[in-house]
Amino acid sequence: MSIRLDKPWIPLGPDAVARVQGQLGVYEIADESGQVVLIGYAGGRSQFGLRGELESRCREEPEGRAFRYEVNMSYLTRYRELLMAFEADHGRLPAQNRRPPRLGRLQPD
Amino acid sequence: MELELTDEQQQVVASVRRFVREEIAPLEADLDPDASELAPEDHERLVGMARSMGLYGLDIPEEFGGPGVDLVTRTLISIEMAQHRAGLYAPCYGVFGGAGLAQLYEANEDQKERYLYPMLRGEKRGCFALTEPSGGSDPARAIRTTAVKDGDGWVLNGEKTFISGADRADFAITFARTDPEKGRNGITCFIVDTDMPGFRVRRIVHTLRSSHYATELEFDGLRIPSANVLGEVNRGFAIANDRLSRNRIPYAAGCIGVAIRAQEMAIEYVKHRETFGDVLATRQAIQWMIVDNEIDIRTSRWLTLDAAARAERGESFRTEAAMAKLVASEAGGRVVDRVMQIHGGYGMTKDLPLERWFREMRIRRVGEGPSEVQRLIMARDLIGGSFH
Image 1: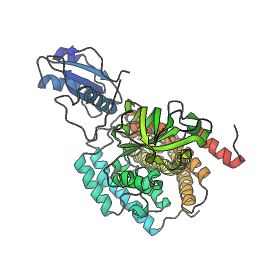
Image 2: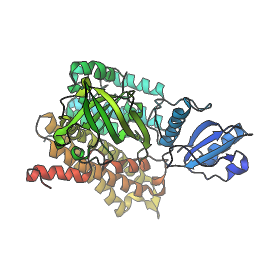
Image 3: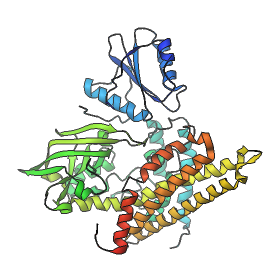
Image 4: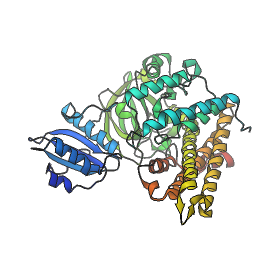
């Protein structure tokens, strides 16, 4: 498994999100330029899993965005891993992410 | 061995049980089922409560400010502290404080000033870096990380895996081979600052465990001053080994706590859940599972408290600790499995803590020395000598 999420981007819209399964996992949202602006997860309390979370994002950010996701049962550690990898690459977290308590640091390849 | 608790032990057990049920469990209702941390404000509030109970820093030796709890009482507390969803690997979410890294109590005064006291004040965090990709059950032979003397310091090269907390640590208690000819007498323990060039946390190792994920480390020409050798050069294995034996007792206790809570859930459930016109409690198949659970729990509890009592008395406890760890981790897995079976489909969901316990309990048969190594330890003690 790649440390960074390397799935293809999908335009963010109701039809595309409706095809996502309601499973646990992580996702990324990109802006118009393809920059990751949010890393999130669908956890054990997410209604309808990844689909539910992405539907919420779709309503909040209806245009010009893209998403990609990964079904993953270890969604919390994977979420932290993605945040740490992003910070290692960019020196900061994605614009819409708040720093979770005690986020560690990775130096991935 | 006398298993009747003293009045003081009964009071401590009751107060920790109440704390878990009234303070910890309600918070979990709003947390993600895989969470291993409380919101900072909740954590701070509960640390205050733990302090007022006189139980903060349970594992810190009394001379360093700990509450001076004996090992049997400490084991009883560990059993209680594990009785919630995250309890196996994050008992009470750490609000009772930890001892940090016990190896530092044996450090010299300079090292205590730089690492131990800041750690006890919560200013620095450490991690324990022993296991390598070449193996964890036999660290004396498996360690391939090397430290080579260079001027007034050492140069470290190698890698470690399954290291918890390295990505958040300020320093790592690290074991490296300093004499390739001497086997277990050629390993030295170093205190490695994680901000030194050459220290890298390469990746998270995703496992069944929800709490305290493991990481993979790389040392690439990392320079360590000689002042950071912990203990004596080539005597590091004893430092690692001491921790391994002692940790087996609380490790077993955590398994027992989860098993007790799972058993309580099962007993409550079978009295209410109806199938084919009657409650599950009337079914012999269910009754036997409940009884088998109780036998597993009581056996584990007896062995673990016996190991703790021997250690407390200063007697040899290696076999007893290995037996307790082996039995409690395997019995705990059986109990959780049976309780899941009793709960049927609900037992598989994240609505209940059982699926998390099931995943994390599986690790207990491997962590802190797998069942096979525990048997090896006991066989060596029973038959005598070292053999293959």
